[in-house]
Image (cartoon, rainbow, N blue to C red; front, side, top):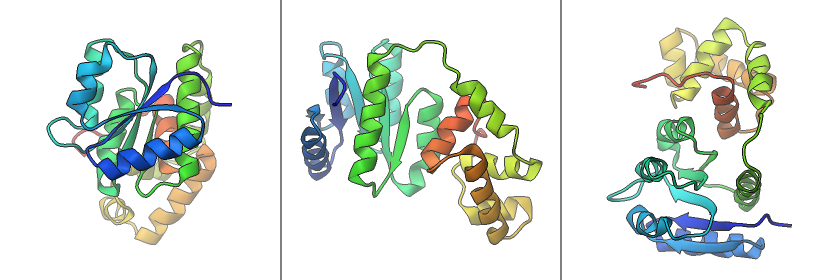
Amino acid sequence: MPADGVIYVVDDDEAVRESLAALLAGGGYAVRTFASGIEFLAAAAGLPPGVLIADIRMPRMDGLELQERLSAQALPFPLIVITGHGDVPLAVRAMKAGALDFLEKPFAARTILDSAATALARLAEPRRHDPAGAAAASRVALLTAREREVLSGLLAGLPNKSIAYDLGISPRTVEIHRARIMEKMNAKSLSELVRLSLAAGLQPPSGG
Protein backbone atom coordinates (compact mmCIF):
# COMPACT_ATOMS: atom_id res chain seq x y z
CA MET A 1 0.00 0.00 0.00
CA PRO A 2 1.55 3.35 -1.03
CA ALA A 3 2.71 5.62 1.79
CA ASP A 4 0.93 8.93 2.38
CA GLY A 5 2.23 11.94 0.52
CA VAL A 6 2.19 13.48 -2.93
CA ILE A 7 4.66 12.81 -5.71
CA TYR A 8 5.59 15.92 -7.68
CA VAL A 9 6.92 15.41 -11.20
CA VAL A 10 8.92 18.32 -12.63
CA ASP A 11 10.01 18.00 -16.26
CA ASP A 12 9.93 20.35 -19.22
CA ASP A 13 8.94 17.47 -21.53
CA GLU A 14 5.15 17.15 -21.50
CA ALA A 15 5.24 13.53 -22.70
CA VAL A 16 7.56 12.55 -19.85
CA ARG A 17 5.36 14.35 -17.31
CA GLU A 18 2.23 12.64 -18.55
CA SER A 19 3.75 9.16 -18.74
CA LEU A 20 5.27 9.41 -15.25
CA ALA A 21 2.04 10.79 -13.82
CA ALA A 22 0.02 7.95 -15.37
CA LEU A 23 2.49 5.34 -14.11
CA LEU A 24 2.57 6.70 -10.56
CA ALA A 25 -1.19 7.27 -10.40
CA GLY A 26 -1.65 3.69 -11.57
CA GLY A 27 0.54 2.63 -8.65
CA GLY A 28 -1.88 4.33 -6.25
CA TYR A 29 0.02 7.57 -5.67
CA ALA A 30 -1.30 11.12 -5.63
CA VAL A 31 0.59 13.00 -8.36
CA ARG A 32 0.99 16.62 -9.40
CA THR A 33 3.04 17.79 -12.35
CA PHE A 34 4.96 20.98 -13.08
CA ALA A 35 6.51 22.09 -16.37
CA SER A 36 9.57 23.78 -14.84
CA GLY A 37 11.64 24.12 -11.71
CA ILE A 38 10.66 27.78 -11.50
CA GLU A 39 6.96 26.86 -11.54
CA PHE A 40 7.42 24.28 -8.78
CA LEU A 41 9.56 26.59 -6.65
CA ALA A 42 6.91 29.33 -6.85
CA ALA A 43 4.28 26.93 -5.50
CA ALA A 44 6.44 24.87 -3.13
CA ALA A 45 5.80 26.76 0.11
CA GLY A 46 2.06 26.10 -0.13
CA LEU A 47 2.25 22.45 -1.21
CA PRO A 48 1.58 19.44 1.03
CA PRO A 49 4.62 17.29 1.90
CA GLY A 50 5.77 15.00 -0.85
CA VAL A 51 8.56 13.57 -2.95
CA LEU A 52 9.99 15.43 -5.92
CA ILE A 53 10.97 13.66 -9.16
CA ALA A 54 12.84 16.14 -11.36
CA ASP A 55 14.91 16.03 -14.52
CA ILE A 56 18.50 17.08 -13.88
CA ARG A 57 18.57 19.05 -17.15
CA MET A 58 15.84 21.62 -17.71
CA PRO A 59 15.96 25.13 -19.21
CA ARG A 60 16.31 28.16 -16.91
CA MET A 61 16.49 26.09 -13.70
CA ASP A 62 17.81 22.53 -13.68
CA GLY A 63 17.07 19.88 -11.07
CA LEU A 64 20.27 20.59 -9.14
CA GLU A 65 19.54 24.32 -8.83
CA LEU A 66 15.95 23.54 -7.84
CA GLN A 67 17.25 21.29 -5.07
CA GLU A 68 19.61 24.02 -3.86
CA ARG A 69 16.82 26.62 -3.83
CA LEU A 70 14.49 24.32 -1.89
CA SER A 71 17.22 23.56 0.64
CA ALA A 72 17.98 27.26 1.06
CA GLN A 73 14.31 27.86 1.93
CA ALA A 74 14.22 24.82 4.24
CA LEU A 75 11.49 23.22 2.14
CA PRO A 76 11.74 19.46 2.66
CA PHE A 77 10.96 17.72 -0.62
CA PRO A 78 13.08 14.55 -0.92
CA LEU A 79 14.44 14.47 -4.45
CA ILE A 80 14.71 11.71 -7.03
CA VAL A 81 16.74 12.87 -10.02
CA ILE A 82 16.09 11.74 -13.58
CA THR A 83 19.28 11.76 -15.62
CA GLY A 84 20.73 10.85 -18.99
CA HIS A 85 23.90 8.79 -19.08
CA GLY A 86 26.13 11.83 -19.59
CA ASP A 87 24.64 13.57 -16.57
CA VAL A 88 25.83 11.04 -13.98
CA PRO A 89 28.37 13.48 -12.41
CA LEU A 90 25.54 16.01 -11.92
CA ALA A 91 23.36 13.30 -10.39
CA VAL A 92 26.17 12.35 -8.01
CA ARG A 93 26.45 16.01 -6.98
CA ALA A 94 22.71 16.04 -6.34
CA MET A 95 22.95 12.94 -4.15
CA LYS A 96 25.87 14.44 -2.27
CA ALA A 97 23.62 17.45 -1.61
CA GLY A 98 20.88 15.21 -0.26
CA ALA A 99 18.96 13.67 -3.17
CA LEU A 100 17.70 10.19 -2.38
CA ASP A 101 18.24 8.54 -5.74
CA PHE A 102 18.96 9.08 -9.39
CA LEU A 103 17.40 7.16 -12.24
CA GLU A 104 19.22 6.82 -15.53
CA LYS A 105 17.16 6.93 -18.72
CA PRO A 106 15.69 4.71 -19.96
CA PHE A 107 14.30 3.38 -16.69
CA ALA A 108 11.86 0.58 -16.03
CA ALA A 109 8.44 1.27 -14.54
CA ARG A 110 9.25 -0.93 -11.55
CA THR A 111 12.38 1.12 -10.84
CA ILE A 112 10.36 4.36 -10.65
CA LEU A 113 7.69 2.81 -8.44
CA ASP A 114 10.23 1.25 -6.06
CA SER A 115 12.20 4.49 -5.78
CA ALA A 116 9.01 6.48 -5.11
CA ALA A 117 7.93 4.02 -2.42
CA THR A 118 11.30 4.24 -0.68
CA ALA A 119 11.30 8.05 -0.83
CA LEU A 120 7.77 8.37 0.54
CA ALA A 121 8.58 5.95 3.36
CA ARG A 122 11.59 8.12 4.24
CA LEU A 123 9.37 11.19 4.20
CA ALA A 124 6.82 9.55 6.51
CA GLU A 125 9.47 8.39 8.95
CA PRO A 126 11.71 11.25 10.09
CA ARG A 127 15.37 10.42 10.06
CA ARG A 128 16.50 8.77 13.25
CA HIS A 129 19.72 7.03 14.10
CA ASP A 130 20.71 5.47 10.79
CA PRO A 131 23.01 2.44 10.93
CA ALA A 132 23.34 2.47 7.14
CA GLY A 133 26.51 4.56 7.27
CA ALA A 134 28.37 2.08 9.44
CA ALA A 135 27.17 -0.84 7.33
CA ALA A 136 28.27 0.90 4.12
CA ALA A 137 31.65 1.77 5.63
CA SER A 138 32.22 -1.87 6.55
CA ARG A 139 31.58 -2.82 2.91
CA VAL A 140 33.98 -0.16 1.63
CA ALA A 141 36.62 -1.62 3.97
CA LEU A 142 36.43 -4.85 1.94
CA LEU A 143 37.63 -3.09 -1.21
CA THR A 144 41.24 -3.33 -2.35
CA ALA A 145 43.26 -0.18 -3.03
CA ARG A 146 42.75 -0.61 -6.78
CA GLU A 147 39.00 -1.13 -6.32
CA ARG A 148 38.86 2.10 -4.31
CA GLU A 149 40.55 3.89 -7.23
CA VAL A 150 38.02 2.46 -9.68
CA LEU A 151 35.18 3.42 -7.33
CA SER A 152 36.50 6.98 -7.22
CA GLY A 153 36.30 7.10 -11.00
CA LEU A 154 32.75 5.77 -10.95
CA LEU A 155 31.73 8.44 -8.42
CA ALA A 156 33.20 11.04 -10.77
CA GLY A 157 30.90 9.72 -13.49
CA LEU A 158 33.75 8.50 -15.68
CA PRO A 159 33.20 5.72 -18.23
CA ASN A 160 35.28 2.54 -17.96
CA LYS A 161 37.64 3.63 -20.76
CA SER A 162 38.52 6.88 -18.98
CA ILE A 163 39.07 5.11 -15.67
CA ALA A 164 41.29 2.58 -17.45
CA TYR A 165 43.34 5.35 -19.06
CA ASP A 166 43.78 7.23 -15.78
CA LEU A 167 44.89 4.11 -13.92
CA GLY A 168 47.00 2.67 -16.72
CA ILE A 169 45.00 -0.54 -16.95
CA SER A 170 42.74 -2.08 -19.60
CA PRO A 171 39.00 -1.36 -19.85
CA ARG A 172 38.38 -5.09 -19.35
CA THR A 173 40.27 -4.96 -16.06
CA VAL A 174 38.12 -1.99 -15.00
CA GLU A 175 35.01 -4.05 -15.81
CA ILE A 176 36.28 -6.87 -13.58
CA HIS A 177 37.04 -4.45 -10.73
CA ARG A 178 33.65 -2.79 -11.19
CA ALA A 179 31.84 -6.14 -10.94
CA ARG A 180 33.76 -6.97 -7.76
CA ILE A 181 32.98 -3.55 -6.27
CA MET A 182 29.26 -4.02 -6.96
CA GLU A 183 29.39 -7.47 -5.37
CA LYS A 184 31.32 -6.38 -2.27
CA MET A 185 29.13 -3.31 -1.78
CA ASN A 186 25.99 -5.40 -2.42
CA ALA A 187 24.83 -2.80 -4.95
CA LYS A 188 22.44 -3.69 -7.76
CA SER A 189 22.81 -0.42 -9.67
CA LEU A 190 25.09 2.57 -10.09
CA SER A 191 22.71 4.79 -8.13
CA GLU A 192 22.71 2.31 -5.23
CA LEU A 193 26.51 2.19 -5.34
CA VAL A 194 26.67 5.99 -5.16
CA ARG A 195 24.18 6.04 -2.28
CA LEU A 196 26.20 3.48 -0.30
CA SER A 197 29.48 5.26 -1.00
CA LEU A 198 28.12 8.61 0.22
CA ALA A 199 26.63 6.91 3.29
CA ALA A 200 30.09 5.50 4.01
CA GLY A 201 31.54 9.00 3.93
CA LEU A 202 33.30 8.81 0.56
CA GLN A 203 33.49 12.10 -1.31
CA PRO A 204 33.10 12.30 -5.09
CA PRO A 205 36.27 13.76 -6.66
CA SER A 206 35.92 17.50 -7.19
CA GLY A 207 36.35 18.95 -10.63
CA GLY A 208 35.78 15.55 -12.25
